[in-house]
Length: 232
Image 1: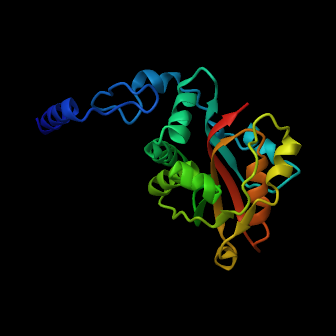
Image 2: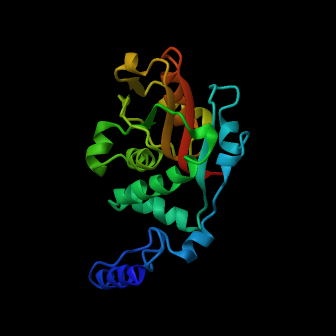
């Protein structure tokens, strides 16, 4: 009886404040969590968190000693993931990043290899881009992960250079574009920590590699990578 009353109340509230699916922006029903069942079925999940030597990990082989790496979805042009990422980055919807972080954080928290981390660090935006957008989309994802995984997050990296767009650049050109773009904030406080470095999308991995190399200047750290999407 109580469950029926709660469901009725939720449906009544939804008449005035509809809850919309993150992917298709249509009304979601009571019991659906952020993403409607139809979009959830269509989402191209990677399940990389269950596979140690997955394609994200392979991006870093021979470059930086990443412990684990995973991405929530494949980034595909004709999938709801592209629409969610577009909303997050260009449509002033930071709540998309937070919601996805909460969802993926619950999944990762069940995996032994993603437990016992000390800190989540998002890939930073340059101050100019941050002012333009109003928020850092990777930080929004970090906030959601932090809540679900019960791991604090902190802006421990700063983007000191406003680099050119990475679009249409080769992997080497992308890395050269960002290799000197980042600096550490309070590195002493990070010594000996196990860190999750998070970003929105991994394409070539050049930006994450540049951030990782800067973090590996700190003694005794272990580093893993988590992103929302993986672009093949």
